[in-house]
Length: 82
Image (tube, rainbow, N blue to C red; front, top):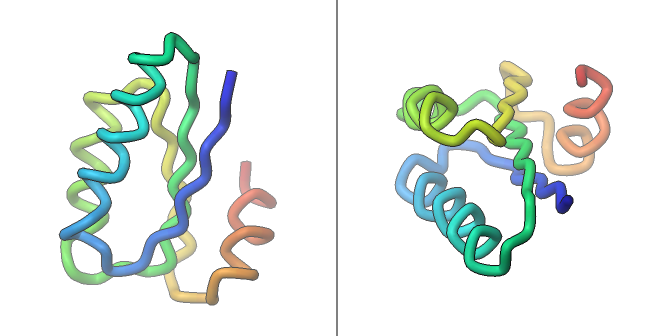
């Protein structure tokens, strides 16, 4: 199994394509994947997209930090909540 972590903040125009690509590539390679998306307080639709994708992609997990803490804190702080 491969675990992928995606950090996001206000990336509504990119996040769905990114996640669907990860899932498709893993399926094609016959590799089991789990995906964690750590969101740093998006305000422009990213969370709505993630909510929809969670219902479609069973291996997708989201962690919402509530505010943008930067990439270092997102990496550490996000996994403290798992």
